[in-house]
Length: 477
Image 1 (cartoon, rainbow, N blue to C red):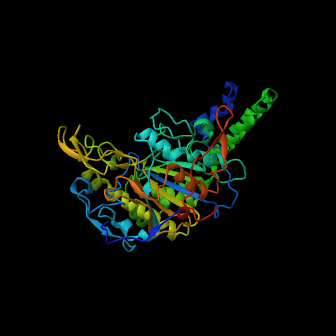
Image 2 (cartoon, rainbow, N blue to C red):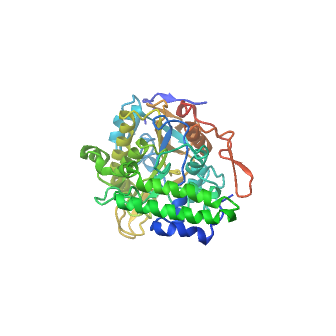
Image 3 (cartoon, one colour):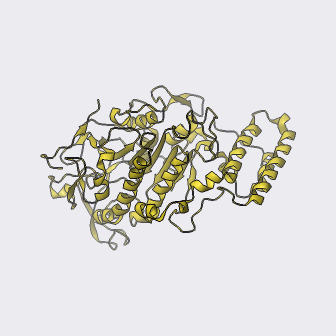
């Protein structure tokens, strides 16, 4: 954005024990419902009614979106930095995006852009772990050491036990890479209920959701009754309350299978054709439409990863020159992205969800402001044939942007700023821990005081050295 156009800135100052084989008898008649599947269906609580409970829709851009080519353009920088895209005005006076996001530009008054995000890890695993769990380790690891914020929130909201919604309280629509995030020492009971199929497919359905056949429902009830009879014979040997826990998981599984509202929540056919068109008749558009349906049905924690063929050859936002011609890749994917995200934000406000539901859109880092060149390793969408010299941008955790909407926050402005090349934060730096504290605040979780015991029983703070960003945490959940 040129110096003579300045937008109004918002300034801010022990795992579960293994079950004995006998305990599997009661599950044998439940066909495709595995033990891990049942564990993931554990109930989560809420202290408020369905219409009042706070929720988060977290949209993840794995690989890292280029901030210079989207939300933080630098039209006055030299050609080695600025890229080929023109800037366009938004609905907020003085705020400009690149031409790749005309739909979001029209509704910029409904969200806030944080341009001063940073973290310390340059690799995809470590960068994602910093953003989702606050892990300060900058080394890439094969699996997360700390639970991500979604699993933590799922765990904390499960302690009351008063939630009655049949739907899983933490649902992932096109899951984030499980090597980069997960429940860690909380155990699989607090992992996401994962929807892996493409919701844009005409035959899309989620397995084990809402049996439509009454006879099947009766047979399921009979099997559960039989298992309970067998359980009673084992109560004397149940020294660790294992069967009581299984009862809870199985009850949730049965509820998910038999409740009509569970089946309806995942049924995109109940949306009118114009709404589905508005989100985009593609995987990303229908993912975010499904996320909106789920949050309206009472699901409180929803993630949706925008990766796959719509990204280009490598199916992620990781636009190294060896993988993608970055500018062709952005042209290839940004129409889908712009349409889906703008439709979701519009619906959050139009349907009266904007106080209760926070929408967050981010990658794990940005891309290098200085454009690099290298030879393609293979042809495909947004990549020339092998050997073709093409532009790219590499990993850049020192400064990047993300988007926040709903949640009762102040909207229609910008928090923070980067320098004239987009290389470093020069105004209101916000760390990964500030990012996490802000999300927790919306969910009514005091991240400064909350600890969870790790594998060794040692209390671990869910956030260290982070505070909620005031303009993004103006609402106390």
